[in-house]
Image (cartoon, one colour):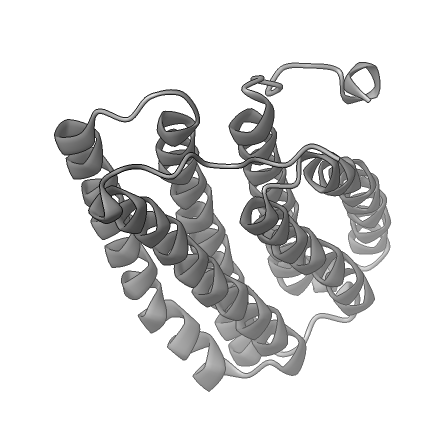
Length: 232
């Protein structure tokens, strides 16, 4: 199992600054996980009040991304990190972008929840929302856990989950389009479900990106455009 062991520096403050940006990123990740869970629950329950809360909280995620990015830039300018230290800082800056975008997707799902609460629940698609939602929530959680433990093997395993998410998404889209063709009256409401499913599929893509950053951090290898089977 590949693990990363960051060097301990003469400067205690440097060590603390490196640990701080990582812990800030993980705090942001925890907030994003809650956002996603609440958005999915708001959609399933047609809970517009919870959906509005998700939308309002998204500004906090944006502010955290900007603050962590600024802290990383300051650290680079002051400490000029090299080797694994620099990879950690760069991995954090890229990961927070993906976390912010997961927050954006959660906001989109919340907006669909509000529309469905106003129009009435869609006749189909909630089983797919629950199934794919559980899958992407696990991917996000596992990707952050891999980063926390500097575990490249776990990151590669989690990364592969995106394949199944994509297959489930395509299958759900085919079924829902067929249903809309059979019952045109359902088109408006089912389209909202489709947009929510699309947002969930994108969450899986961002979780995959986080896994790729973990591999880069631990191995120093950029696998963003690599064949995963060959890497294994």
